[in-house]
Image (cartoon, rainbow, N blue to C red; front, side):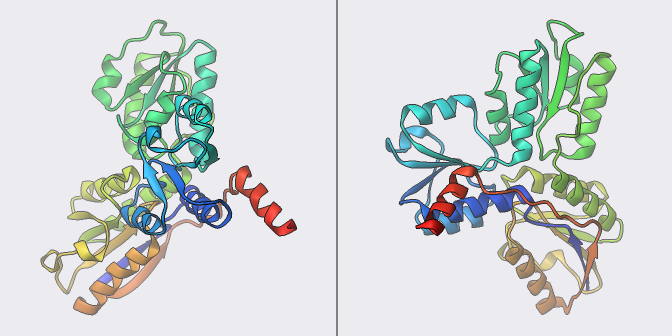
Length: 315
């Protein structure tokens, strides 16, 4: 068996920042630490932090007045921020800067009187937070059919933005339909789909052409992981989204296969290596890491924790 191990894979800069932020909060701030929604969409990461005393909530009514609350990488709406202030919560913002960029775009377009067509998946934490910035001005577009039928008050004042974790191909198809309908459509200065999402999708497209089967390591509620599995499957090979080696089935594999492996942007590398070890042990697999693009992006900790770290050093 031959394993084609995609690089880049796994944690992106936004996920690294969010996890480092929560680690630093555990070190610097009094317990318990509450997190609004999952810090990232990976059940192993969430389970490990839960074991260490972190409390994940989906409703601010579960957070005691005056407690510490950390916002997840996916961002939150202004209403959540207002409620947190009302409850006198000590907040730490671990929103990915690329998500914050989308929020700012939406606000800017809405303030200029545009209807914003937000391309993304209903109910995803990122979309819920973004729509909360200007609910009166935003229309959610989930597919090409909705792009073909959405109505706006003024066809000359229309803009679009996208969820950061979409499939690049799906987003391009939807946006092209919108451009065909609205000749004056405005968009972001740069693509909203994050660099890491694009890089991981590109790697899967390249390696799937050589593979007989593809494994994507990531949780089912991870949008970017699901897109990777869909892209691999679209190449005509079996593709499985798995949370780790415990979900692998021996009857998926045979000894002369070429197996592609990648990981979503919120999946720990230890789970990838667990899958590699499984195939090495059972099929004497040989691993070939394919580097398709280098990533050197790093996001700083939120200012609240930078200040706390500085104060601890000075004391």
